[in-house]
Length: 233
Image (cartoon, rainbow, N blue to C red; front, side, top):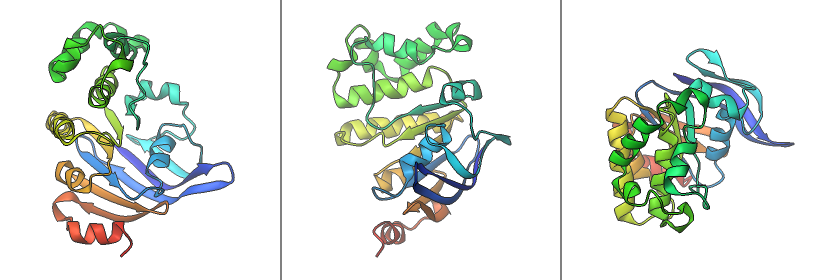
């Protein structure tokens, strides 16, 4: 579904990604792990058009994505849930969710998708009129994920969903990822918790210094070897 072929990208004169090639298959969960500074978030930003690609190609279902403006990604069925939640703090929970279906093609489905969001995240239903800025970190992450699903994306990109959250909330989030995967959703997940990420994934990529250091089916990954590469031991 999603293919990156020899992609280079960065910020001005500073190149971060060096000839990165990877694939995310339809209906599968692909996880990208690596230490801080490995280029994971830059990779996601390159896919979303937030960082210019200076070499190589990004394709979705065979169609070139390079140069596509970020605001047109919804037209291609792509949604990203960024690191740090980034909810609209001065808007209610429900208003935040409605913003996830802002594009004209999705507005007619708002009521149905709101109900689906509340079924998947019951806590959000309880707080539907509450300002997003007053939510706990875990609730805000649930809201960010639910908002990303409001456009019913074919490809869901998630950046560090468990960062800074309590173990109980992390468990809930990974249960939801399992449900989304079981429902056939195509997911690209960047995650710091290697054990949980590998456990939920179909395929694992490890990045080091802007390059792919490992590409392996999740069922074949040996965590000790993965950690040795992760910490460059």
